[in-house]
Image (cartoon, one colour):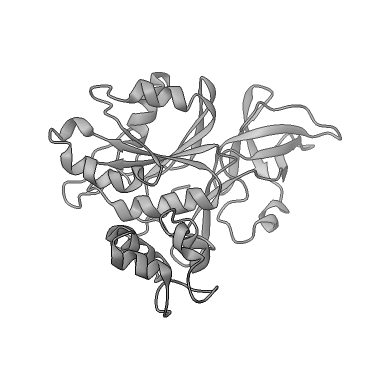
Length: 319
């Protein structure tokens, strides 16, 4: 959970990263947001990452002789939500989050269950509580198809919320759940992350955008992850994504994050079974019997096979 800054010894002060870019970060220090530069050594601490710090990081800063404020060090992270970008780089979206809102629209842009599955795996791998939030439900008068689609996750014990920022359906109930700790919202461009967070806390006044008529995708309105105060915690808005590559997970590590695979993994013939091509695979047998939903098996095979969850157009987050 992200807490307020406190003074440290030896000329440094602890702060909370509110919003980072590749060159500097806005850091909350003693109740004031300060623009901070990065110490050169920071870039060597996480060489595979795209930025030396991320929203939610606890950092130590000091004032240099010429007046600049420098981020000297990053405290150990309690959790890391990350995705893999094209080319293999890792983009850490937020650090020290307590829960993640996996935001998906039921209509525009199109509902993509495979993308949700990937984000659920990432949340499980990071030990962050996931909540699936289906937006724009006011645009779907017949809820039966939606109820059937999300039942795949509810049967697995995931918390699934249906919300509308137009009618207010589900917004207050969601706000009661996310009022403590650090909550990050992730999802495609255009699903309504910024609208959702603004509905939860109207004083945020986040920019929102429409779905592109030409491509059926959302236009990016959030260009960098940023924290915003909400009740006793923080809300983190993130740039929209078009696909979600999983960073640093082997097939066996992915499989154990599929809750519906867990009862069967131990019965496979081989301990190193990837559940793709091996004989006597209990997971594949469960899928053939119908004990694992076909869509979930398809999601898994696409992940471990490197098949894109959408069209392979992995939009990088802005700086």
